[in-house]
Length: 310
Image (cartoon, rainbow, N blue to C red; front, side, top):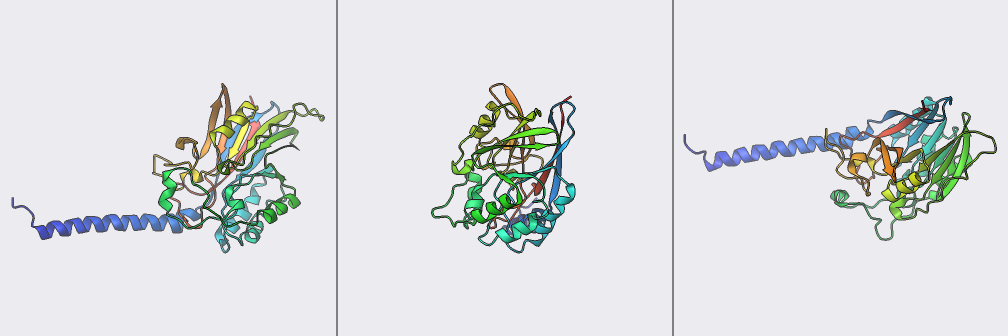
């Protein structure tokens, strides 16, 4: 058989390159135009309540990263009130724009009538800057020099006015459904602002059974270990975006912190010093406005049903 001519070989190479480029363009279009708006609710059941306790429904929100005119996201967030949660836990990174507070509060207004707690993320304090998105895959992201400040005071003031409790390096307690929930929360570990406050003192003047919950934005291992050693029975975090751009049937390539990538999203177990604690890491709801893509990692809220231990 005669060897193919140079011209036919070049045509074949061009066809393959064109096909590859076309597939890449289609994947990018899907990730940026479709999947990032395929919002859903992941439901999990965690048996951590004292025997005989009635179930508690906890709605975990994280990484909303809202900007003006994200109407699809606003309407979906408003619809989450139909889940009638007993508690809302917000693990930060609500904003992604200087003018994002009004649309965020519009989106969360139906949920602010429920009891809630929150911790901040870096994108509550500082806005993102445009940069090469490939740097996301080189390791945990860094805050750029002189980042634009966001109106976090206005945001957190509105949360507090609605009755949501801030857990920024704070501990607090709340009575729900015949159980006292003891919270320990930290400021964003990604900014090295975390100062572990411990959990509220043991014992309850009401005589209610106690369940301890650790809350953080970024699930750095040091913080997970603090909570675990402190007696947490549940840990909630976000920050990872679930990897944001994942490989189908494999998962996340990065967690944007020191958490193993296999734990970048979902309900898992964190173990330290012989204790095992259920940990939910949310894949988050939004993206940076400068990297508005998701692939094989749909945006999510998480509805955790806490049930009695058997």
